[in-house]
Structure formats: structure tokens, C-alpha cells
Image 1 (cartoon, rainbow, N blue to C red):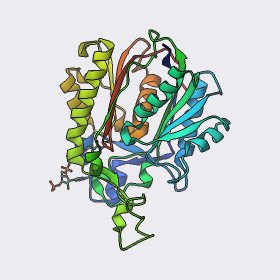
Image 2: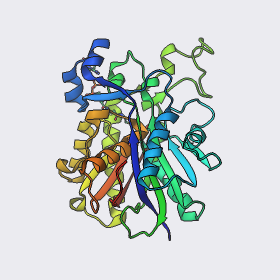
Image 3: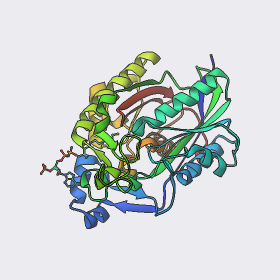
Length: 335
Ligand code: COA
């Protein structure tokens, strides 16, 4: 059986650094509230007109460089904020990278999107359909957040992270273990953009059927918090069972970077010391599908994640969706 092995990693953040104080100038919030309730200090917002495909291509180029290649047999993009509702953005990302002609598609699973995208790419490798796949998580979440909704406007940020998956052996460093995934459609209203799809028109298209606020992202934060802790802990436990590792064997827990209190609660549930958490949200906020690859790239670049480290990835997102996997961190070139 061929395994999918991480062979390169890269990330990119847009230029617009936004501090908590910057947000407090625009809405009724404070640096103290945001830091203590979420752990977030700064995030980056795209300038007007910078599409998700640009972020994705920048991160993808760096991941390819880290893998020492300019080629991929496919591009899989996890995003909640595609350039347009139709078509998918991955073909444009492939074009930007000089990969026109390869299969390219988007995966939509909100904050779990990167784990779903890894699954699709790993399946292509296992079946022999591809030798090397570029997997990207990229978001311009600031373009869908309601600027007047303080509970979500302070949480999200923009950015992109990517890995190159290549065919390899199950026992080698970087080989992905079983990716545990799940979903529950009855929780669709917890994290949603209500209008603009087939169910409910965009408010400007049919003001009678949609509220103006329905065009924006909305989240029932407190409920999401509880589900995130439960599902991330449960799926991480399942992923560990597949590898045969015990919680004490885990060197680094890379949870979806939504809220520092969620990460601490997951670590506590799993009996993993909080010192083993990779924390990146303080710099970039919640970047949804980009969150895990951004955290991995940062931890790799700063030496927080070293070759041989036993790593668990876990996420929860809209849908609801969730997932986890485990791997031994490989030796990679930083990019
Ligand atoms: N600044 C100041 N006060 C704020 C605020 C802000 N930015 N946002 C909310 N508040 C207030 C609320 O109005 C409320 O006030 P009240 O008690 O007078 O009614 C109080 O703070 C508590 O609100 P609540 O929504 O219960 O806060 P919370 O502690 O749950 O934190 C989140 C809100 C969004 C940070 C938190 O719920 C969270 O992180 N949820 C999960 C988010 C997530 O994981 N999303 C992505 C998963 S895919």
C-alpha cells in the first residue's frame, strides 16, 4: 500500500496586519476582551480585491519550493471563501502556478477543510492516480465576516498554508496515518452564510426573501465552542488508536486554531500537557481551512516542530465537520 507523505510545506500571509486595538477603534470591543476570551493578538486581512487564489498560489509556490519541485499532478484547494461562487478557485491557483492542465478542485468543509483535502489527495496517491499533489488551505475570511458582528469579526483572519503530498512508504517520516473524518448536517446553522446559495437568494437579488445580514458569515460561538472541544478530542483519540500511540507519546498537538481556550480544553481532555500545543492563533487568528497548514509551517520554520516529532492534527468546522490524523514530522526544507 502506498502512503501519502508530506514532502514540502509553505505558507503566506497578506500584508494587512490588524491588531486588537485596530478593531477596538472600529467596534465595541477591547484588546483585553479579545486576548482573554480567544488568545488572539493580531490577524491579517487581505486588501480589497486580493482573491483567495492569490493567497493560495503564494503558499503553494513556497510548498513546491520546499519540496524541491515545480510540478504537481493535481491541486486540491480547501477554502470557504473561493474567488467566486462558481467556478472553483483551484484551476485558477493551478494556472497561477504554471500548472494549467492538471486536475484541480476545491474542497468545502470550512475549518476542517484542510483535513478533507488531505484525504482526497491521499486517495489519489493511494489509487495511483497521482504521484505528487499540492494541497492548500486558503481563506480570505475577512471578505465574508460581518464587520458589525463583534463576536466573529474579532476572531477570523486571512492567510494560506500548503503541503506537497508525494507517494511513499507507510513507515517513513511524513507519512499520513489514517485520517478520521465526520460530519453532522443537523448543526449546519451553527456556522453559516445563509444567503447566496440555492436555498436562499442573495439579499440584493431578492430583498423580500433574504435579510441583508444573511449575506455575511454568522456563528453561534458558545455552541460551536462545546462541539469543537468534544469532536476534536474524540477524533484525535480515534486517530491515536489507529497509530497505536498513547496521549503521552504525542510531542505536538496541532489543533484547528480557533480559540486558545478550545485548544487548552482539547489538550486537557486528551491528557496531553498544554506545553505540547502548537499555538499560532495569537498571530493570525482563526484562518479556517488555512489554520492547520499555517500553524504547521510556522512551527516548522521556528523549530517548534522538529523531524521525528509525533504530531496529531485535529479540527472542527462548519457543516458541522471534524477530523484528525497523526504523523511523524519529516525533515523538510523551510520555504
Ligand atoms: N468584545 C467584547 N465583548 C464581546 C465580544 C467582543 N468582541 N464578543 C462578544 N462579547 C460579549 C457578548 O456580547 C457577551 O456579553 P453579555 O454577557 O453581556 O451578553 C459576552 O461577551 C460573552 O459572549 P459569548 O459569545 O458567550 O462569549 P464567548 O466567551 O463564548 O466568546 C467566542 C465568543 C466567539 C470567542 C467563542 O465562543 C468562540 O471562540 N467560539 C468558537 C469559535 C470557533 O471555534 N469558531 C470556528 C470553529 S470552526
